[in-house]
Length: 250
Image (cartoon, rainbow, N blue to C red; front, top):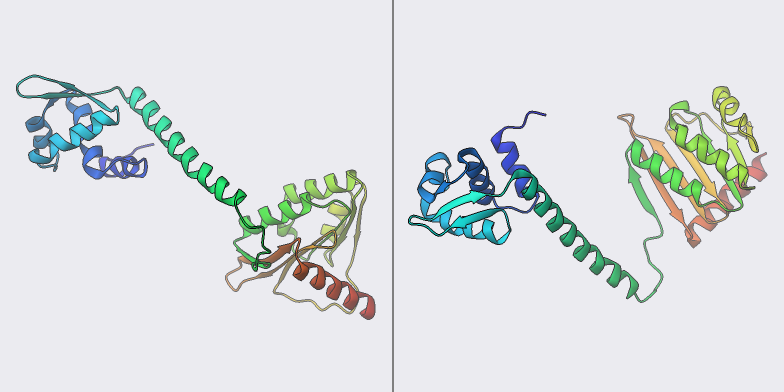
């Protein structure tokens, strides 16, 4: 991968260095070692700023200082710098998520008002479908008219739920989908009721047990948007309405 200096500086910034720190560190690797004057000569970092930047890099463990006159600086090796930044990243990551875990545990436990969630983008909807299917204990209903919305992972998950003794039903007017998923042991694939229209905007429907649901539509640009809910009164009521309508119209 060919990376120019600007891209390298930006990458170091994403790792927590300032722009000046990244430029000084790169400059010292270019010249192996040098004084503030040497660094300023090959970067746009003012000489007056090099001293404080070098001090900061020393505190980070990224360079060594030779107490000579004038003071000289030498960077640690690229391998040592990589390990140092990786440890720092892991430490900051752990600190951040430890706090998030703690405040989550300290939650009052009050029922959230966010019963309905929206997911946009085909890949993200794929992931949410798999997550919902994987959570099924007793039954699954999966429906779509589009073969491209049945990923290999979704097919595997349907088969796994059937193997785990969940009732798995696939509903599709597309014969190739029924043949593909119906070939999985324990999966019942069938066409939808005759009264169902051919909605060109429909994407997928997933019903899991009695309290998990996902409904998606195909956007004008061909992408997918879904709403989903799990473990909520909203999901339970919507599932009851869908199934009551199906029985009434059958």
